[in-house]
Amino acid sequence: MDLAGKKIVLGLTGGVACYKAAMLARELGRAGATVQVVMTQAATQFITTVTMQALTGNTVYTDQWDARIANNMPHIDLTRDADAIVIVPCSTDFMSKLAHGACDDLLSTLCIARPARVPLMVAPAMNVEMWQNPATQRNARQLRQDGILLLGPDAGAQACGEMGEGRMLEPAQLMEDIIAAFQPKLLAGRRVLLTAGPTFEPIDPVRGITNLSSGKMGYALARAAREAGADVMLVSGPTALEVPHGVQRIDVQTAQQMHDAVMANVAGQDLFVAVAAVADWRVANASTQKLKKNADGGAPQLQFTQNPDILAEVAALPRCPYCVGFAAESENLAQYGAAKRAKKNIPLLVGNLGPQTFGRDDNTLMLFDEQGHTSLPHADKLTLARQLVREIARRMAA
Ligand code: CTP
Image (cartoon, rainbow, N blue to C red; front, side):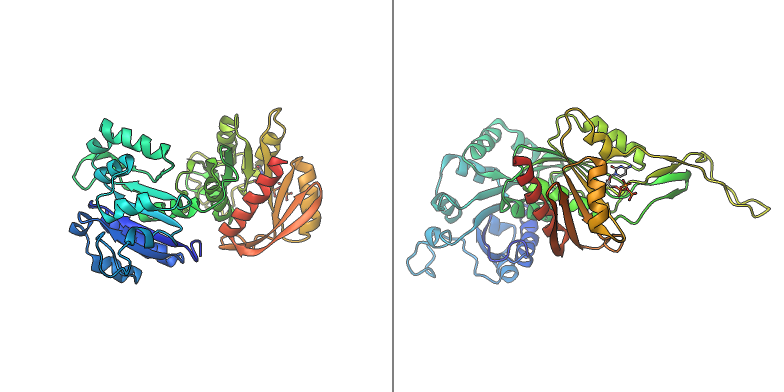
């Protein structure tokens, strides 16, 4: 559970997006956090304290003068053991209050009264004109300058019927951002390029050759690199996975397309991680028309030609990024892994005993570098991805 033991003060201000705050409260609880809700009067126009209390299992506070608090200092008591304050949704007015240090209700007062170690995150939610107004933009700049983390906003259809920037992030995206805020920024300022998933090599317009890679390990690594503060680009073969929030994805099908996308974007990258299960061969005589069954029962004769080795080509660039490869072996992992690292001429190779790990949410990894090999014990792929980011960051720093 990513937020086990964490106490989150969840502040709601006035906005239609309060309904998403209800879903977020539930997700925070599922991730192990204790959630203390504080609402402004305007927020209570959109959603009731009853709903938020029921979802979090904790009394909701709305008033600076709350007789239930013995010392009558809710702004102090609610923040001293908090691990973060998250304002979801954050209205235009509340951004303005934060930018100016106003303290005229419980939520604004506890934001100002929070200890310096407690991070404050806000998820703006407002009409596009309100967001683009110079006063709001000025306030957004001020909040960033004051060390307040802005989550979004996104662009798209708005509750008022207009389109544009100002739409609040979805609860799942907010969860990724909140969890990321607790991860060490080991790759801050770094640019990371990854490949993930299988490739699909056409036989004809409706058939092709692919493999069982789900893309889960590569997507988990893209997320972990982004959590660690990197600017992340993911070149992905066909998968059904959601792109991690804040990661730029380029979709490809074939190994050749993956190669071309990587080569077009590799300049200026600090780290290249090749997680994709790239087809070693493609069909040289692929048909542009759908193949038909022969009356005589004969099967089509496929000829194969080798695909470019993307990782080896990147590793051979004169100014190559730090290169990490993956290898799935069905046996003799320790022996094959070391040999493959040497053959590809890369500083780090990550091995796993596939294909039984393909598509699963967990894995066991073996790391091969010039010193030999070490293991990352069995865990879910996101946990392993975070450990791998630590291992990579340490080696890059050295
Ligand atoms: N890889 C790549 N381009 C290819 C083939 C592989 O970038 N055309 C990358 C994979 O993403 C992985 C690593 O190379 O990081 C290992 O790939 P693998 O196919 O296991 O290694 P090979 O050298 O092809 O060895 P073999 O197939 O003989 O096991």
